[in-house]
Length: 483
Ligand code: FAD
Image (cartoon, rainbow, N blue to C red; front, side):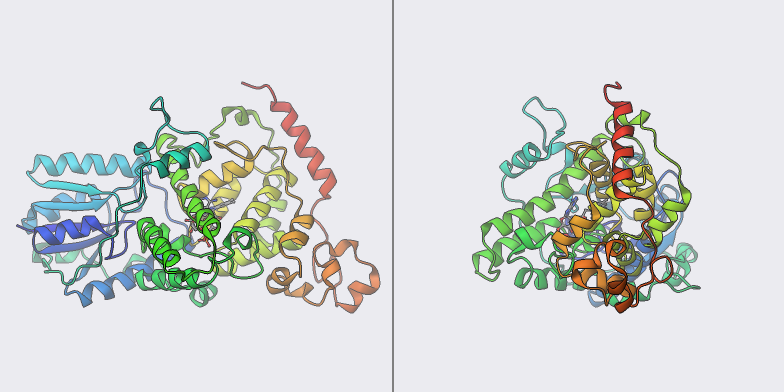
């Protein structure tokens, strides 16, 4: 008896039922395959950096348990059957994935391996509920978050997470296939020149231990007051668990149970509403996967087909200014620069920057989705696509298109002292709080005293807000009533 666990988006040892099943079966070969061909969307730059660090952490923790992580690159549909045959493996395990191309690949492999007499067992380690486990009373996919989450919660507590295995009896790679294994550095995941990852290294500790650390900090910190605090980008008001969840360094069951335990022990000073609000954000992640599963083209196709006729503009210069954080709107620029530097952006600012692109600049949401896909360390096939469509108004249970965030009032409300802008847009750091979210409205003396020269040290607004807003509403009017 010999097993293979194929790691994918479950880069952890604890709460990994697929890994546990392999270990219980017999000596286990632990494998990761970098699969960049085929139909699957290529990972963005920031995700590739994260993945490299996460694999390094997983290598180290597997080694502590007595096993090695074998790395390969190529097409799993070719590699796995060869490997399984050469090593005499009779059980293959993996955690399920939910993008259409990955599902198709896994399904095909399952058939091929079954044909060769190998058992494949797949498990859920990524979600509280499988997408198909939650449905309307009529058995239909859900389209609205609140009833979705109600139905999901009515299914009861998620199973308690299993601890990490004590020891793994390793199954060595057969010598005939030793040449197929590669070193981490050979996967080419990390930037070389220029090395743009300095800010990411400072900000993050990828890997299972880093994820547990973030969760611990959150439970004893920002969870108290999360209900209101979560909207504030100017301090650490949320868990920052998203990239860890994305790569499966921690699972939602673990987060769920740790939250319950902490709140029962009174560890988190927050009330039940803070906890409920936080769990419902985990619920939005689940809902996004539900949407992706039933709408495989969520990242490229309007969920609401009415938007297919939307008259998007094509201003490439404005898109560049948005990407570089040079729009002249301080909150938007702060967010885009935070994203570039750290691979992450606060949710409130993601909404404001996305709305600004889609509405004030009238740029197709898919351009924004693509940029986020490349630059976010938490770039997620479900949450990114669902969130962009949510902001665009083309998604399921989306914000209506005519709700247009004003970056100035959003800044005044959620970054009231201007600390967030000062941190990421240092050329405005000396501006008075009253002027920091709308420097073009400040008088000459205020700007001079702060060393700001509009158009030189900091850009003038890329577009007039009232003009952009009206243009967006006019564009919307053209598709009202479209089928
Ligand atoms: P917390 O507030 O601590 O929430 C805990 C967890 O809940 C998060 O880690 C995340 O997994 C989940 N979550 C929270 N809010 C949402 C949400 N609105 N939708 C789905 N899941 C949510 N999230 C991603 O994980 N990957 C993405 O690629 C992504 N792209 C986004 C793009 C846009 C335009 C917008 C508006 C939002 C996007 N989000 C995405 C959702 C959200 O902004 C992030 O999940 C959140 O900011 C991550 O920070 P956190 O871990 O501190 O969140």
